[in-house]
Image 1 (cartoon, each protein chain N blue to C red):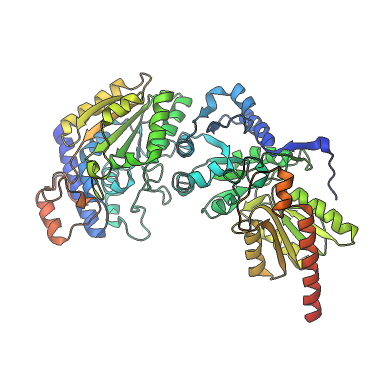
Image 2 (spheres, helix red, strand yellow; image 1 turned 180 degrees about the vertical axis):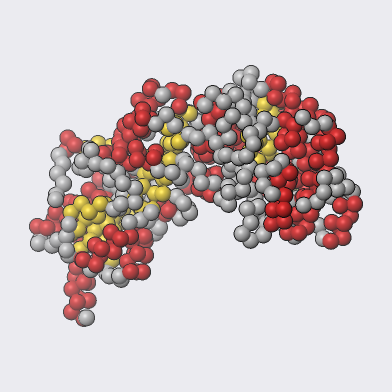
Length: 325
Length: 280
């Protein structure tokens, strides 16, 4: 199956979060929201209007916000913290580690403006290390949905999931291509296009780029299997193993540092179960800079042609290995 | 209801437990633990409204959050003697596979503990969250918290102090253990806290002071704090204590912050702390 979209279908993933938390809060009175002076950026307006008593404005004090969220769980609440990804992770790592993760608190850390597509604000705000930071924490679930619909569905799904969750999404308008009524199943990878020549594992904004790359490869009679790893942790290892067994090579694509993210994760599964040639499309150990999202994707090697090039390189390696073998 | 002399007896036994636990583990933090024995004894045996048993939500009861987690020995002793877990378990303090971790944790399921602490500065935020949850749940009970004075050097404390004052979290009673000692010396030497009372008032808190090593004052101070809660402002108790109280060779000496007594020192300390309720 090939996903379709038009320009009219572009939406921000953060808007999916804002709509999702409003929907889930209507059904679940235990859901509460906290922010650190970024309610507008996280699209909380409807939630605040409808549920003012369940909304906690913490000011520009993220460490305190994380602690308050941990405390709210003690009274049975399901707190959603909201700020940019940079201030949701690196700035408050020890608070998350001790008061939330080690303490097993049911806090949903909702992080917008993740990665380089944050754009013009530049490297201070473009965190590219957050997936690594969060997936290292014992007991932390890490979810990186790919579009508006999936972010909305994930925002709703995590309320019913016991334990701390890191939910990562972004700022720009992005193709919205997954079905609006699709249930979000935490920990279950999604095969978006079936293929036999190469596996492309992607998360977040790069899932759409991977679909575009698969389409281009298809025009060259190369069959790519695109798998959406929307849950980084717990990883659907069986899906990774099954796809790689079929294709014999793999690419990862993510809006994150090459160290600590999806690429490392898939490589560790592949190395342990079925070593095959791999390539990683990610930011190569550097900080970002100011610019438009699409310009930055291109400059930092996260664009559709980068995935296509990686696919062609790896298919050549696979061929060489086959000849040598 | 316990009398002041009964509470004193409990506190003395708690102090014996503290030095014996830290001696047995040959690690831990006796100084601050001894200084806060009167406070925690009064809190659990006289002040807090507690349900039988333990559940994480703590609805329909007062709850306590320890922010300066290194004084775990005093909390463990008080929790055990208040019936949260078997007294015998105090023997396992800091040992492998124990529920009594070096710093308090929920991870091993020790009843009485609702959040991990140890990395300093985080407990007031958690206490505020628990207090806000009580308001949402229409639960009129209170949240008590305890903080070290040196701990107030952590910036997160002031984020929390600012929040609680600005938002009128008036079901929170936060106590500062003002013993003027921290690892590297006195708080005056390391980082002068200045006029703490004026600082809390400037952040829109109600404050009161008490001698944390006089049981009658502790009980009265906590009762007073309770009586002024619920009036739109959080309550801070600045509690003057002596680190190591009342063991003569430990008192007011920052070197006993995190050092275990040897056999001889244990005997000397226990000679000053009669077994009032029986050792674990």
